[in-house]
Image (cartoon, rainbow, N blue to C red; front, side):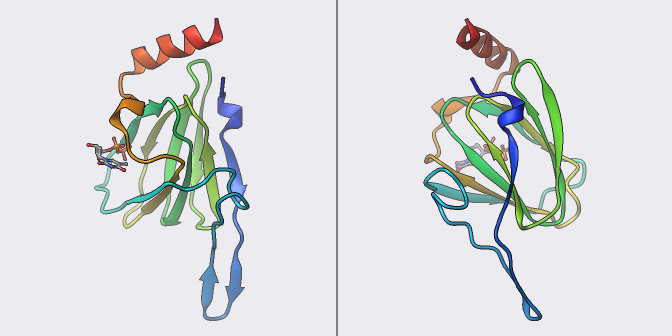
Length: 139
Ligand code: TYD
């Protein structure tokens, strides 16, 4: 089963010149999964919290392409907070990790690359249900 230690920062390529920067993300090269879906969070009001769920099969790469925010990851035993504030640094989150996103700076944009299409059945939205599922996986 995945642990919070499997949630790791991936250094993305950055092509820099005086006119600005480019960060390409190539599926299978810069990240280990094929990208089936891309979405982004924006216009997040001050003080808002996002996430508050885990996924059974979905893997994600989360990038702060603008501004900053915190991602709290939790494997049912351990919890850690990762601050994202660079467009060339992504947080990889494997399956069965509870995540919460907060402390969004004004104008922050959170880009998410996902390994699967949207499927509500892939979510644990209740923390206690997530905990029970992690316990039965550990047995
Ligand atoms: P959710 O994944 O809970 O958002 P967050 O983790 O950012 O707080 O999704 C919020 C709502 O948006 C929920 O009703 C499902 C819907 N949604 C889609 O329809 N498609 C998607 O790809 C995503 C990510 C969410």
